[in-house]
Length: 87
Image (cartoon, rainbow, N blue to C red; front, side, top):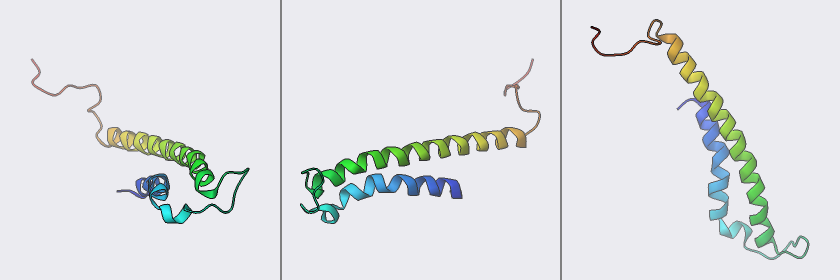
């Protein structure tokens, strides 16, 4: 796993792990606009997860594109050819 893919995994981890750590946010105080911490923390996780997922998506997209370009440039003369027997 390259360093970029490790970064992508690290960006996606909070969206999956934080909601599972219920003791972290299992309280009523502090409140925000009358909502207990338990509810507004979970609601705050949604935009955080969206932002981190978008960043991870663009990193993965650019990493995949770079890997495909490196692969296609690493084997010259194979673009546009078909495998199999030629008659």
